[in-house]
Every structure is written in C-alpha cells, then in structure tokens.
Amino acid sequence: MTDALAAEWWKLRSVRSTYWVLSVTALFTGFVLLLAFQMAHVWDGLAADRRDELLLRPLQELAGWGASLCLGILGVLSVTSEYRTGMIRTSLTALPGRRTLLLAKSTVIGAVALAAGEAVTIGSFLGTRLIVGDRPFPDQRASIAHDLPGFVLAGTVVPVFALLGLAFGVLLRSTAGSIVSVVFAWHVLPLLACHLPGPWNARIGSVMPGALPREMAGLSAENSVYGDLLSPGAAAAVLVAYVLVPLGFAAFLLTRRDV
Image (cartoon, rainbow, N blue to C red; front, side, top):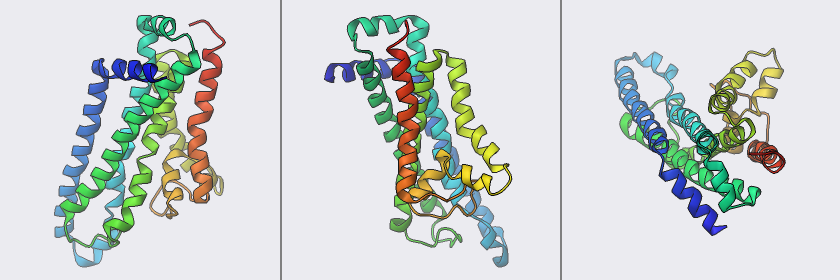
C-alpha cells in the first residue's frame, strides 16, 4: 500500500493540471481577501443604523465554496487523465488490485484536498478578520476562538467534493461528463433545493454538502440557503456517506468492467 500511495502522489504532482487547480484556488482566496478590504471601506461609509445589515460571514465562506469546485475538478482530472492517455492500463499492470488502486488515489486526493480546504477556509476567516480589524460587524462579535472550529469543519467539505469528482471520473470515464456532474452537485442541486416549496426546501437543503459543516458545528442556517434540521452526529454521518457511497459504486464498477 505504501508503494501505491507513493506512486499516486508522484502522478498527482507530476502533472501541470494539479498546479493550475491549486493556483486558481489560491487566487480565488486572494480575491476574497481583496473583497474584505472593499467591505471594510463600505462599512466606514455606512450610517450607524445600516451597519447591522452588513454581514461578513458570507464573504468568509466564499473561498471554501470556490475551493470545493476547484478540488472537485482536480479529483476528476486525477483519474480521467489516465483514461484519456491509456495510463490506467499501465497503473493496473503495476498494481493489479483495483480496489487498492482506488483506495490509494482516494487517500492522496483526499489528503491534498483536505490540506487545501483547511488552508483556504481558515486563511479566509483569519485574513478577513485581520482586514476588518476592530469594526464590529454584526456577525463577527464573537471571538476568533469561538468561530474558528466552524471554519475548520467547513474545510472538510472540500475533500468531499474532491472525492466525489474522483468517483464520477471512475464511473463515467469522461472529463466533461464528470465535471458537469461535480458542478451539478456543487451548485445546481443546492439552488434547486432552495426553490422547493416548504418544508421540503429546508429538509432537502439540510442534507446538502454546504449545510453539513454548520450543522456539525451546531450553528443556525440563518442567512444561508440551507436548512439546519440535522444533529451534529447525523450531519457528520451524511458527510461521510457523500464520500463512501459514490466511491463504493466506483469500486464496484472498476472491479467488474474492462478498463
């Protein structure tokens, strides 16, 4: 297994798409921090009675939202590029155990995505707090220590999308189809859930990936498109299911069809 992990790590860092995806993720995070400067400027120009309407948290969560898409695409490319070039046959010749190969890919992609996700979510939170300084935004009155665990949990959604992308890549063996599937799960499904009639909008919204970190942290979904009906334990179980179920189907098909 150690050799399989080393091989997958070498493959991931040897392709330019990895660096492009991570660079776009970093640039998007930098853009969020620039927007924080603009929000601080807007705050300074607002009348006192209007400042309670200006919220910073949606901006802080934007970087993790963008990182989920970027790392989801990286998950797709990590496997569809091998199908496109035929490298998958070489990989299976070197490592005939298909489940082991998938486990190694999942471990490497998940670890990279988790590191990137935590760096982005924590960095955007701390960076925006530093930029706005002592301006008392209505949703930033708690201490950093109080709010930080919620952003640590938010970073766990990024590897979920990365592993979803990997699973879609194995299932569909198509870069375009897999990326469309990731975008559908990342953005379209939450929008559809948001526009359902009540109470279904809250019920389905509460199991969307973007809702789960708040629920795991026991936070309200106020000012969010999601519901908050799950307990922290149930939310964590749903988050794990988003990874295990698609990867389970991917492992099943990978071992039962020709490459």
